[in-house]
Length: 62
Image 1: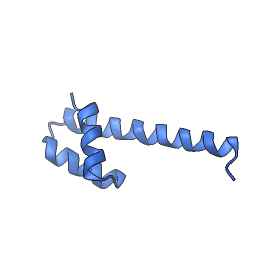
Image 2 (image 1 turned 30 degrees about the vertical axis):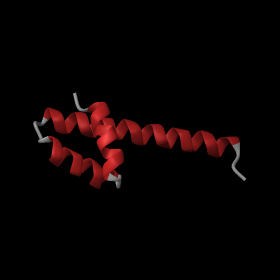
Image 3 (image 1 turned 180 degrees about the vertical axis):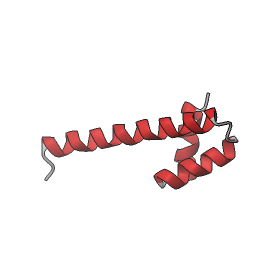
């Protein structure tokens, strides 16, 4: 059974991962890394599926 503390911890972890993904995408873009190479880095560093990584790229790649 999950406690309230466990739920709060999971939400905090998810938010931290989201911020990390955003920071990586924005940093790779600032370094002029091509989109596809950046996508592969995001997938690799965060162990994401291509579908989810593409959604994140669409969200943060400006």
